[in-house]
Amino acid sequence: MEWTVLSKEADLQALEAASGDRGFLVFKHSTRCPVSTQAMRLLERYQAPLHCPPCFLVHVVEDRMLSLDMAARWNVHHESPQLLWWVQGTVTQHTSHFDVRGETISAWLD
Image 1 (cartoon, one colour):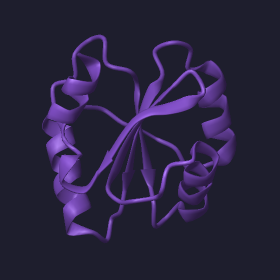
Image 2 (cartoon, rainbow, N blue to C red):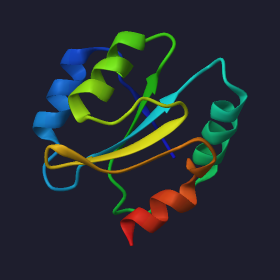
Image 3 (cartoon, rainbow, N blue to C red):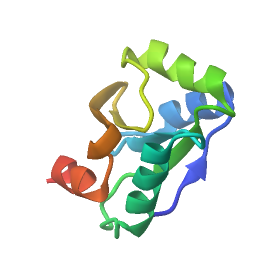
Image 4 (cartoon, rainbow, N blue to C red):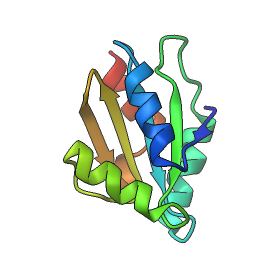
């Protein structure tokens, strides 16, 4: 799985505006957390299907304000690691910790 890093609120707003019906996935990753590191490894090995929405990465330590802004704007309690699927103006699916893995994305897409 390939990621595009989000680091500014303006990038997030542009992404929301351009996402359309397909939406996008966001992986909130802590570089200080071993559980998050394991989740990152699992997601990097995941072979995303062609119909998978684009995937974005937020480093929660380095870009803390963006991470907290997402939690407030999307009304989803902040956790790390955390995987969110944003579609048409709302988070339709989210999970955290040991459920952050490719199989979760596959189940959401089915």
